[in-house]
Structures are given as structure tokens and as C-alpha cells.
Length: 195
Image (cartoon, rainbow, N blue to C red; front, side, top):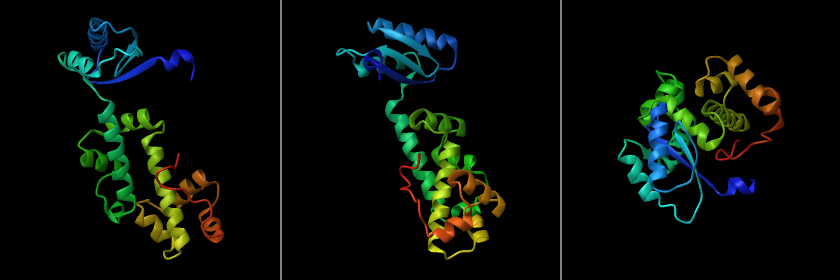
């Protein structure tokens, strides 16, 4: 991190949807005598100083219909991770009547676009990729147990076909399902640190 970046603070802001929002947020931050470096939809970058009062910032922008999101984004991302892991490690995934994006939106009470955007912003990986990595790690676990045939594993994890699972598994691991199974479960990773 450069010295210039060490003295910046990124504020994540809810309800910024238009160029006027950018102008209003900039004005409110400048009224607080903060050195505003950049404002874009959803974020503002200010120069870090000892005088930053997050409560005052939140009060100023809340009065204009905006809200700081730092903790809420983290909560949403953590809730998303928990929902994905719980679903993949339960038997529910095979019986979903909707797609995974609809499931997450209903479970978390947010539209999928919001969930996905927040996830990418906080974690640096796309939510779809995270889901694939979790599913592949679960497949590795099930292959290691060697209790289910490959077609049953595909069904258990909600794949439309064994071929789809096979393609995705090879793309992530670089090996086939059968080769992995014969290796006895090498190369497994903790599910909380897959990317």
C-alpha cells in the first residue's frame, strides 16, 4: 500500500443512485470540513485524519437520505456466507424449487444484485464463484467418504447432471472426479478460506 493510500478512508454509502447523490454527499462531507478525495455511486474517499467523527458523518448524510454501510455490508456478507454454507451442507439444495439466487434473496431479505455486489466489494470474489468453490469443496468431502455414487452426489448438490458437476469440478480442481476419488481426498481446504 502506498503512503498516499495509507491516509485515505473509504466510506460505503447506501442509497446513492444518481449523479445528484454524488454532489449531495460531497457537499455534506465538505460541510464537515473533511478533505474529500473522490465520490462515486456508493462510496466516498476522504483523507484520513484524527478528526474523523463517523457519528457526525452518518448524521449529516442520513439527513439527506443516505446511510453509512460499513457494518451492514459486513453483516450482509457474513449472512450470505452462512446461508450458502448451510444450504450446501444440508439436504435442502437438492430440493430447491427456485434457483440459488432467488433462495438467497428470500433468505436474506435483499435482492440478489445487492447481495452479489456487496459480496464482491467486501470479499474480492464474485458470489457465484464463492458458491462454486463451496460446492466443489463439499463434493471433495463426499468423494472422500466414498458413500455415494457420483450421480447421487450431483443430485445431492443440486447439479442438473453429472456432466455439469464433472465439468465444474475439473475447472476448479484441474482433475476429474474419479481421479480425485482414487487419490483418497487430497487437496481439501477449510470452507471458510476457499479463495
